[in-house]
Length: 209
Length: 264
Image (tube, rainbow over all chains, first blue to last red):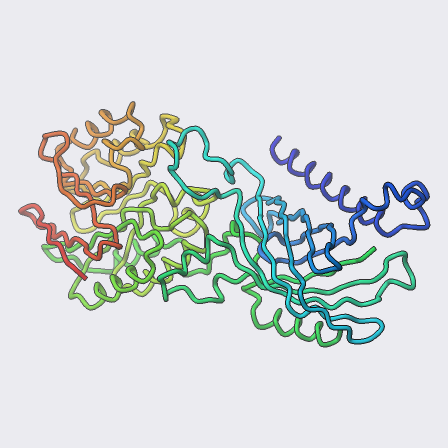
């Protein structure tokens, strides 16, 4: 039952992301969405596909940019198949990225060399509780296995790739190096943990509307 | 674009280990797997003399540097037959934390055995424990002494009445020709509120039943003391956490045992 639910939630999540992707890019095909500015302004500014980065084997996300592209907020759905892990892992994460530096390389390319981000990562499943279950006294454990927060730095190159052949305005490629608070606090006062052990690398692409 | 792809390719090749998918992936190297079984094999290769020397530590949590000093100190000592860790090996039960502590303990020359603690069971910690060490309830005989390790962290199982497995413990303690005395090791002591109170009396009576238990070892409360909570000459030895920078050396001989505290 559990695995059926998981499979279902994975499929549902994936369909939602695909819908986002479709609605975000298929301007000419979908007249209901494009003709109405009421709907259009709520469409995500981009969809993302990410590999690793501590949140999943593969992640799909969508989000918005604010303040003239200086702030980026993304919601990811991530999946780790059971071939890699003990069991299928499903998670969501919310990421806030500040993108202070923008350099225009050419008409078709822009570099964002210093993106700083914060993320909250929530893993689904009974083992990964968020609020302390009732069988523990108050404050028994101060952390929650189901919800971790972390920080990352990264870079991005925005290109016009796909803009001529699809309704997308462009494609960006990004990478990120991050860590989570639970790892970082184990480094405090300890020389025994090498820095590379706490770092989580990831990369991905974003297709802009 | 090409530069970025080049960077990604370079990074991918040089640090594949750093592309993490989740903090809950258990992907231990062979040396970080089946540790208890391997150490039992090592123990079988040792020839015991008339005194068994044991080092006891526990509650390593996030005290990585103290654990490293402890390991360095113990490695310089003359003959240690085996080392016992009374649980709370990891800080939050995360696979990486299991690895970080075990990478330090792997420097030990003596075989070591780790009891499961409540912190080790949070998240998917029980899976990580089983992959790294093996069964949570296990035993071995060295010389004429049987060492029995049992999971007593009842609260982690919502006090379901099955932890600790008293029937298993009873079978292990049944006298036979293979051993004379026994030592029982666990993390949460029976008089603690994290132990299933409905099992406390039975747990201790099984320990006392055959008169063959020399002493028990536990951790959890982060204070060192030796008591006889049930007034029947069975000492409950509460071990030092590694953070207290002390440990016990216990020597077992035909006359009984003695305990010494070492500061490192």
